[in-house]
Length: 139
Image (cartoon, rainbow, N blue to C red):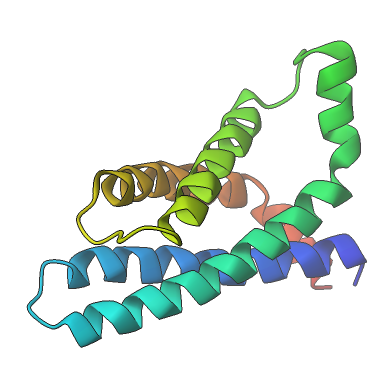
């Protein structure tokens, strides 16, 4: 299997973990157990870090696509992928900021959650569009 597809499959796997843990963390915030919330927070930070690292590798393998936008403009390039890139940047920045503040029920925590939901929706669309290529890579 080509390196690019290995990175893509890892990215899909860690995306699912990050999304699941983020939603679990948000739900745990409505509970009464700080320990449960803390466990979800640790799980989410770890899986999101893996997602971030895998996304960096993914972006670098597609760097030519980004350079094409810078050089030639959007043209026929996927506008959804451009939006996903910007939203991923925002969710990453807000997540990194949360490492330095008490994020439970904070403004930045809720902003990160809302941007995270948008990221999840865009990532699912991005993945669904590429399922034929991902399946083909397994052969």
